[in-house]
Length: 188
Image (tube, rainbow, N blue to C red):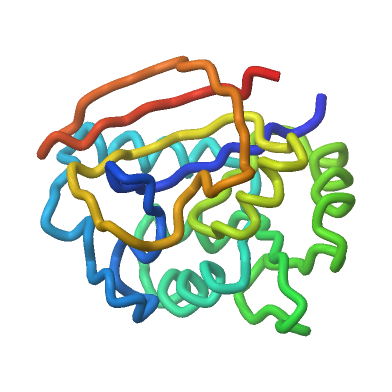
């Protein structure tokens, strides 16, 4: 059975996914920092990663993650570092983060091949341009949103114009500080 691609995002009420922890110098700041998702939210994110089989990154998200996760020592970081990672980049020739492979330059056929070759769940954190392209190509199987009770008024959105997507709600839950978890399957 082909792998299932799940986009998993921190998202504002107005649909922004850009720079949730303030590492990208976007001017949006650390918009998730003032909130706590609590033990249930932490457990959800932990289990989500532990159950993943691979990850896909765009260059910008990869740069941020590759700078941080190899320097941390805990179970979450160990899993993050151990998972196979697939990087969509035309500017990085040799990825430095352990277990990272470059995807072929033509993203859609490369991801189609990856889905057919792998089993299990492939997660995508951040990586807005990759998400946009894969949504348009119909390659996203599920979407997990942790909605923070904040509006930002600007920033890169998960669903920009001309990115239609039909989704079916499979689960919802409220975490601490009013953070909403919504999980969807693609309704093709």
